[in-house]
Length: 89
Length: 252
Image 1 (cartoon, chains in turn orange, blue):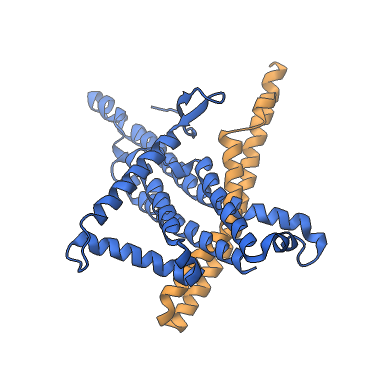
Image 2 (cartoon, one colour):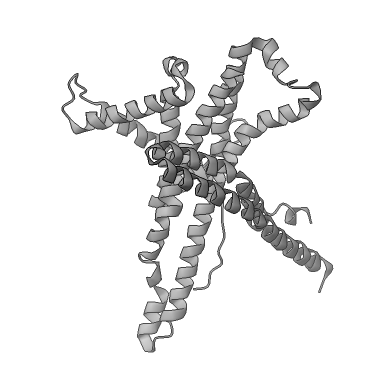
């Protein structure tokens, strides 16, 4: 096998592994949002009349907590479909 | 029936031959379509307004205006409502929601292109900077970068840029991840129905194997979450963050 093909294979394989590793970032938002929703449920259980406010605040907080996971997803998407390293070979 | 799954960006439809060629992509065209729909909707809802509301569409129009005014007044304060931030928030929300939902009718959703969101977040950045200037003047604005201690200057500059950037990436990532997941699901269902139905004997298997039967109905269930719910939620969240960041900038 010629050298060019080897290089490309190594770059593509490493990119796939990198994309997989980047998606580990999904753990954080999962835990964080679960915690937030659990607390919101407690709050609604304690004060059902505040349901609307608690819900909208929770959704906003969840969206902010999601950011790190989204960054990981964007890095994975870049590595999978718009790989910047293959062009440099 | 074993094509690869790929994700592509917006296609370039044509180029305007000025300044070295401005590429007009699907995103631009679809944004204009969505804008035309919104303008048409506004004209429809506000035609024939009366002091005592008698028509259904006037009820809808009044409901939307009241909701947005209430939201802006509650989250940004009475001053911003008077200055006229409510139309801006309403139009961003309508553009975001309808733009994301337009992906469901087969168009390339403008919000699954990062350029659209970066443009919106540029608007947010300009408004934040303007409000900081207005609140503290040029001296106060520059002084804000040296708070609480001057060593933090680089971090303050980063956080200034990071706020609109993270808003753009959040919206883009949510819509794009929905698009990718729905694409993967359709691809998997097409292959699965090929595997199952091509096993049938004779002509029946050959004909049915070519038709992705399992794609009927099943993606719609997932589409409720990945397309409708996340599109509307992201529109709401983008507007909420916009209001909070702008009003927080004015308070400093």
